[in-house]
Length: 193
Image (cartoon, rainbow, N blue to C red; front, side, top):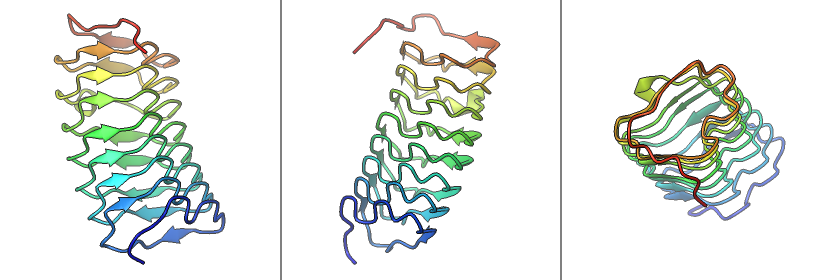
């Protein structure tokens, strides 16, 4: 097996664990989508890109290891992975598609790398158990798009990086636990499409 194809194992609902070949460079879109019994996924070190919805709907996925070399996550790549509790985004990650971790309700911690300049729309939408600290919003972050953290009710405090340039509409809407924010001077909050 030298290459995986889009949707190759989609809806294999009894699949619990996957061992992927070490020489893969990409996980294509929907490759493991809706494998609802999948509990553990270790993405091999050579993978630089994970396609859209690659593991979306893997509701039992609890253990996820992403490679240090990973540079890009497609849209909704882990959307609906409700059991995922902890996430370590790799240090070279440059791009995340919209809704990457949408609905990962058990996700409590995420380390956002300094290589990431833009958080996309709905990146962590409805990650109800997620908490943030100053260290989790790196100084490199310039843009937080609309609804990025919408519905993250356990976020209670936000200290934005001084270099933040844009904060999208409803970026922290529905964060009912929020009791303190610190928005740097000069941040653009105008609506953009």
